[in-house]
Length: 206
Image (cartoon, rainbow, N blue to C red):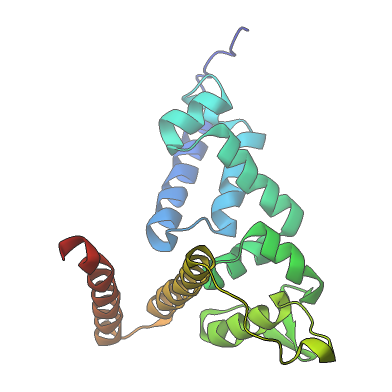
């Protein structure tokens, strides 16, 4: 199949350069994909800005974004389907798409409804949001099941549970780091993250 030629348009190249500069800033600051990052990908794809330096969207993603075309389209699709709130919640508490679908009825006007009150999705509300989402994701219990015998727990389920808690803690540390304006507080957060990393590495050194 014949690929379209690269366009020799200075204005298109300038627009693309600006968009790529913004994307690098979002990646450096956020680590994870933000809604603004996904919106930039959508703009580059839909307005065909990539044609200033690449013959196709697929080629552009691989060579200049270091991600696959499929992954880029997936991020754009999430933005179009759920809006920015999905990315904001995912950054704060590590939500998967499946988990977001389960709590979506509690999302209203870019806020999370907790016990009848609208809570803004911002870093300082991360602990409250995490607790509320944990409740929302827990299956309802009948009176008969309120005091069940503890089920036998396998290593696999325990690992999955601890990994989920670890991601939540890591996301809260990241959110706290971003919201803090104190250099000392940021240093303490980085020290805590380093200590956790060293603890996780202990089994490899024993």
